[in-house]
Each structure stands twice: as C-alpha cells, then as structure tokens.
Amino acid sequence: MAEKGSKIFVVEDDTDLSEMLTAYFKVQGYQVFHAGRGEDAVRMITGTTPDIAVLDIRLPDIDGYEVCRRLRQNRRTQDLPVIFLTEKRDREDKLTGLELGAVDYITKPFDIQELRLRVRNALRRFQRNAQVNPVTGLPEGNMMVERLEDALHRPDWGIVLAEVRGLNKFRDKYGFVAADDVSRAVTLMLTNAVQELGNSEDFVGHADTGDFLMMTSSANADKLARRCDMRLRASIPYFYPAMERHRIKDLTDSERLNVHVVSLSSKEHQFTDLESLFAALAQSK
Image (cartoon, rainbow, N blue to C red; front, top):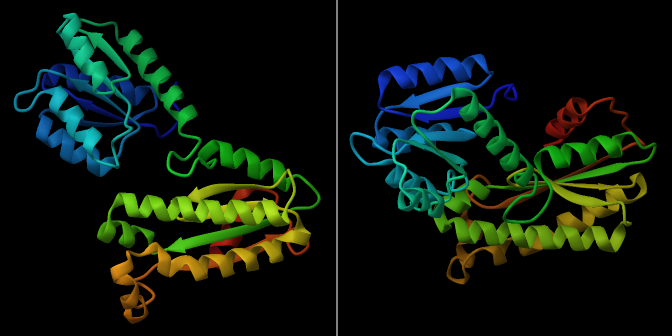
C-alpha cells in the first residue's frame, strides 16, 4: 500500500489505459494526476510537484524523452523519479531513458502488479535519499523528525529556530545559484556556532527551505540564539552582489533578506508531541 497522500502523475495518451492506471493507483492509496499530451504534462507536473511520474514515451506532441529533459531543467522537478512506460524494447531506447535519469523502464504489455511494485520501490529509494538536503547536506524530512522526537524525550533540551526570510524573492531576483550560496553560508555559520557552544549530541537540520533548527541543551539555547542572530544579521549585506549592497537600506523588510531567531527549552516548555512544538515555534515567528 502506498504511503497515504503520495502523488503519482500518469502521462499516457491511451484513454483506456490512463483511466485504468488512475483507478488502480487511487485504490492503492495514491493521489493520481493525469495528462495525455507532453506539453500539458510538463506544465502540470511543474505545478503539482508529484512524488513520482509514470511517463509514456510515445505521445501525440513531444515525446516522453523531451518531457523528461524539460523536467530535469526545472529546479522544482529536476529530481522527480520517472518510470518510463513504453512499447519500445530496443537497448538504445532504454539507455536514452536511463541517461535522462529515469529510475526504471517498463515495456507494454505489462503486469499491473509489477508496475505497482516498481513505483513503490522507486518511491522508497527516493524518500530515503531525500532525508538530506542536497544543497546544505543537513538532515530534513523524516530524519529531522526522528532527531527531534528523540531530543524531546530527554529531560533537558533546547531548540533554536533560525529563519531566513525573503529567500524565495531573493531566488527569483538573483537566481538559484545565489540562493543556494546563501543557504550554504547560513549552514556554515549555524554549524560553527553549535560546535563552539554545544556538545557532540547537538545538531542542525532543516524544518523548511529557509528555516533551520538547532537542537542543544536548555542552558545553551539562549546563548546559541543570540550568537546565531548576531552573525546572520551581520552577514546579510554580503549575501547580495557587491553592486547591489548599497541599495539594501532602501528596501522594505518584505523586499530584502532578514533574519528571525527564537529559542525554546525544557526550562519553560514541555511538549508531548511535535505538533505542539511546531505550533509554539510558529507562534514565536
């Protein structure tokens, strides 16, 4: 059974087959989206950001290879797991798909149970790999959740949330490379601060794209928050291109990068679950 809520996108121009796949995977617990043309698939996949795509190669406009190429060129979909579904059996066709980063390749006619297992296995591999942020190398997703749950079960804990606000607008204006450089620089500063003030059990991870969580002791939480706040605020002008730095003071808070740092600890709070923790962090923003 698929994990509840997993999204699969089926790109298939054969109406009967697409309806069968849609109905079947819905029964298996997936959210299912569908497109019958390649151009529509690129546009819709970029908008819905599914967890996996089953992509027919033979389509009435652009072929599945071209769909995959365009998805790989888009930052939001460049790592999307793709299973090619096709009648082609030639070795060269299979190699083309693999060169484009397809995780699997299944030929028609196929066993629906086999396709289900291949989809399930591809999702599991992807989810394991997705537990570490590819830009910063910090834990996120399930790995981050497990670390937080373990920490909250200790009698003494402290959490620092460092939020870099405005990162999406910064990315839109200066590009993904510049935004990634900001994330890596922030990671280095936070990691160094934890190493200077913390101990071997402390860690840094992602709660979201611009949200960094640090787990430490209750005694260190406030000191760590102050140091992170000071270092990040001092560094913000240097995240911008040199020719743009003189303009930062003229921007409103909503237009520029800014930092918000807050700490919580077991001295003032007791949480029985992560939902309560995240609700308290949200109120502190």
